[in-house]
Image (tube, rainbow, N blue to C red; front, side):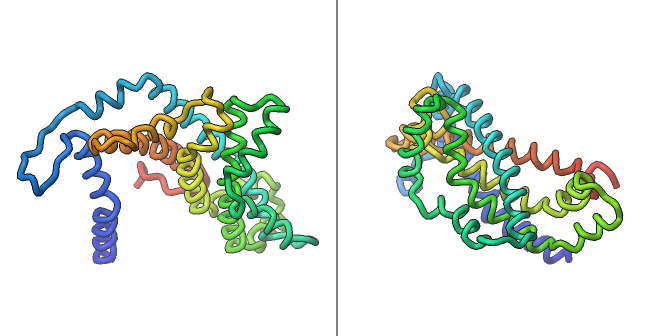
Length: 264
């Protein structure tokens, strides 16, 4: 077991932690090329450029708020739809499952252009509500698929046994389903937040420039050749999903049968 753990941590450190640390290190140094023979010069210019952006704080707050709303809706729709598709037989099940996964096959920009006209008519264009709705298009199919697979593995036996013992639907959901769906919830959380934060074109179309998120600030800087500035933006861009993931992980610790790390 110790050998497995050591090799696991080595792989994680090499593939995930080391690149993140190098990116953080690069954000505090001037652009450098090893073949030039120049020494490393530490500086704050890249972070000063980042913090000089007047809409940075607003965009960060909007990104976290929209991401949280998209995540909550994804969890609600994914849990209910995934459970229904996995555990309950009904006519047209294959057709509905294919229909729910159709947004993955259709270009998101085409959907955004069509929905934009509808949102103008109902009055939610150029608002955060419209941006949340359009962010559901590329995220909902993945959530449904993940929870469908999770409920298929869970099966109906445990749920039916709880019903026979007199447990209410609420108690079944809180004490049996949610604790066993922790892995699926983690996957949906990270996938949904990352997809939502990476949307630039559809956010610009539906938000109309009124709803500013981090990609709208980040993408214009892609033309720069300054790798230090890009590294600083990348580090800042990674903060919202990590913060939200930690918050969700903390909420999962409140579920029954969860391992409490502060207890022996």
